[in-house]
Amino acid sequence: MELTIDRLSKQFGSKIAVDRVSATLEPGVYGLLGANGAGKTTLMRMVCDVLRPTSGEIRFDGRDVRALGDGYRARLGYLPQDFGYYPDFTALDFMCYLAALKGIDRRAARRRSLELLETVGLADVAGRKIRTFSGGMKQRLGIAQAVLNDPAVLVLDEPTAGLDPKERVRFRNLIASFAQDKIVILSTHIVSDVEYIADEILVMRAGAFVMRGAPTEVVATVAGKVWECHVDARQADQLAAASCVSNVHYAADGHAVVRVVADERPAPGAHPLEPTLEDLYLYVFRNEEQGAVLP
Amino acid sequence: MSPTSKRDVGRLLRAHYRAERGAPDAAAKAATLKAVRAAATERPADASRDAVDAGVCGHGATFASFVAVQARFIHPRVWAAQLALVAAMAAACLLAGDAPSGFPLASGVLAAATVLVGLPDLLSSGIHRVAELEYACRFDCRAVALARLVVLGCADVMTVTAIALAAPVMLGTDLFASLVHACAPYFLSCAGALLLVRRCAPSQALPLACAWTLLVAAGAYTLFTLVPLAYAQGSAWAWALVAAGSLVWAFREARAWLGGIAGGLDMLAAAANQR
Image 1 (cartoon, each protein chain N blue to C red):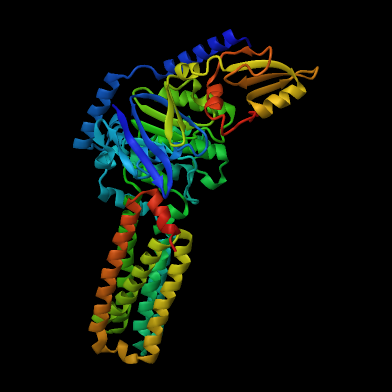
Image 2 (image 1 turned 30 degrees about the vertical axis):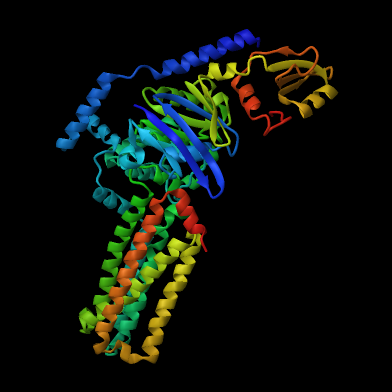
């Protein structure tokens, strides 16, 4: 099974949202990292046939997905970043409705819906209207509908938004168990969501892929660019203003331990640290977030 | 935590998630395919769980079965409202006694109002922002819109027919004239509403369609009041021509609307943002 993205572009008026992106995806988990406006959502929408490309092609097992039509979409699962719902629907109604759209037999749809609601921890509220759900509950419902038809290609746009840490761990386990011989593409700002489950990281910036590889490979590109500095509070503020700081920890005596991502040693006495995916993200997008400090 | 042990934790976590996947099970896949074939060729009353589970693949459903399923998801208020319109016409006939002259107007106004009853459900994908999810499904947003058009259209045909038949059945008025007096305003209302749906945002389309339907009803009333001959027996063929022309217009608007939806989510949004 292979999903080929071939010089895909999408233009809205004069703005190029996706710029001649190409990639070949085989079964595995792909983490799509990028800042807001990088083009991740537009790319995912084109993969899911929600948007028509301005140019380029997407092929599934060698065939154009436009030609495959409903045959391709029958093998898709999609969770948008912000999805709507019919206000009178209960969770079970919503699942059964989408099951019908996915062409699932009515009996199988009901049973599968109940199973998935159980899996995402919504079995007790299956009969409640979605409009009474919290943000996290809606997100879990969204994840459940995305896997209703056991898709070969699963596309998740910011799937862990609104989930608490326990739910995010449950989600990672769900994806990991689901991902055998499937193509899973998930976009997120929370790098820890993909750091351990992704086989490959795709870093997107200004509509194009700027980096691609296994997590250890892409992280290795910022080896020697992550530093730890022990400075006083005033120097910590100066560093925060001038450099890309990923973390500041203030000790009781007023000194600060600052983690900085920079090409050169940012302060005398700074020593290099092992980089993480978060450091890579900050390094690639440092111009958009110069001097930003992560909360 | 030291950098070394952090690395070890990372390795352990990656190994854990990789182990969760397991290896693809060819035997299980073959069993599922066998069950799918069995379910496709025969459906015994006590179909096995595996065969039913095979329906998860979703390849067997036809568009016809999808349309039938969509009827389940139309809000019950639509059916109730249509029944109420038919009941109103029947009540008017019962109360009219020997004065059937106002029935062509009444049937036309009630038939035009039928369009408004189903319009919220027709537009609900856009109103409630479910379109993005629907586009990515096997039966996509266009299929959903077409299925709703078919279901609501069929229901409208039955409603308008019942409204049009009330006077001929209960009071013995001319059947052909009654039908065309109902159909012309209905198709005019339908065509104008679809034009507005195509050109306006979903939230604007509903009130504008109401306004259009009122305009059609007002036009019918004006005609009835100022030019009573327009509703005379001899003018039935003129009404039939208007009905036929309006039907063609409605069909073209429906086709254009569905074509716009097929263009993707950005085309749907762009059409809604046009003035």
